[in-house]
Amino acid sequence: MIYSIEQAFASEVTMDNHSAPGRSRRARPMRLKEIRLKLNGKALHFRSLDDFSFSIESRTSVPSKRFDELLDRTPNELRQEARNIKSVEKNLVDILEDALIETAVCGPAIRELGLQVFSGDHDWRQLMAELNELGDDFEAYKRLALIKYMQYLGARQEVLRIIYAMKNPDVATINEQIVERLGEEFDAGETALFDMGPRPDRDPTENPLERLPRGEIVRAHVLPGHALEMRFSSHAFRFVNSNGWALLGPHGLRFKLSEGRNTIGRGRANNISLGKEFRNVSRRHLVAEPVDDHMILLTDISSHGTFAPALHLERPAL
Image 1 (cartoon, rainbow, N blue to C red):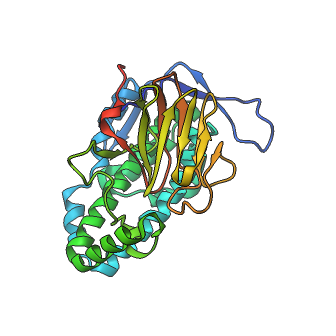
Image 2: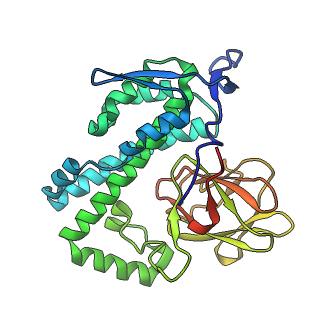
């Protein structure tokens, strides 16, 4: 899949000092600042967000030493590790939601949460500490680092899922059968913890679904009158553009998209509230912004993932 962070981080931000007392400060565009960091005694200089993004991309994978360490853990220890990651992830998702939707600063929220929640792998803890020493003018770099760290957590969860399945092949097989029988209604136990249900892209003969990178805006192209098949976690949805963009769901559900940004999820505060019956859908799951008759911008901010056909997704020229 190809995607871009261009729309999310096209410019640096500064804070509006005229916000009402007690309210989150808002971000407004300003000229991008260069950034200088020091990690393990080495001075690093980044001239742009693209430069910074390229540099930390390698930190989103799980280092081999961590994989070897997880291989030695018992199934109970793997389950506890998965629970710990889910707990951290939930807190970070809340911070990211506020940063992307409410355009609030994320630096203070990260400091309040504590740097101990960040892994020592790839010097993530030190990197976040260095970034948090910088002022509010560097919020875009902090948001980008948070997005990449959550992608690292996703990779770590995938490693846990693989190792747990290796150690418990019977559990994985049973869960597969349960999900096949109960479909979208199943949401419990190891499947919820390790995402061990059927993978949305498991049929190689069809246009495979790929998980959208969390927090990064992706451009999706759909011809008028056609549908963009999606999965919000395990739930099937479609975006269509027929006399205006709409989201179609199970049992005849239809939601009209407004101009500008639409937040989609189980929570009532969303533009499109899906309801509590969609148990795997996050409180805030996806941001969708129609651009024209054939393009829509999508930003995944969920816990369990948003999936779309790879062939519909495109990286715009930077």
